[in-house]
Length: 228
Image 1 (cartoon, rainbow, N blue to C red):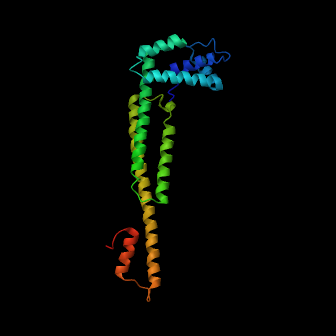
Image 2: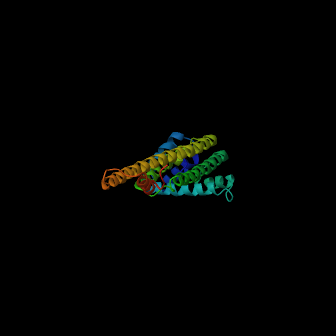
Image 3: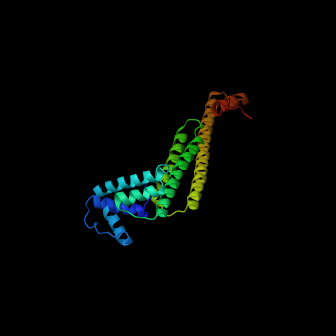
């Protein structure tokens, strides 16, 4: 998960560029936001530097995530001692809270995925059912892509909570819509089969008619119920 572009993440990217020996990064002033942004852009264009950057980011996130082992001051010391990066304690605290919030969003998304599929799993097996589950899967995937870590960067905790609730509502609404469509299509297919069986029975009779009892048997065979 990548939370950037917080100050620490940017400066870790610059540090990665230096480790990868990219030209022009040795004298980047951490206080010069424009210079830092330019350095980050340069790192993003270099495969080797990106690999180093991703490793540093992963290590930083690991320390943010493990709050029982690493207090904020511990993470700050790691940044300063290992990478000569000095950011405020509050900045590290924000990164930690954002990481936890982002992971909570993913956990909630997984819960909603299961809820969406649970709405469909009891339907009779059919091509439409398979299509319905596929559509829901595509919807979920689309939402997860939209919930990239970068998109969470500027959100406040209250906004993240609102987004989580919205995702849950949309997931339920979408799943309910798909369930209705699947059931409608299944009913259409069953009605078509019923009509075909009625025509077949009529064709086999002498006068083209069938008795109420025959009609009831056909209905029961197709719909699983007797005539009302």
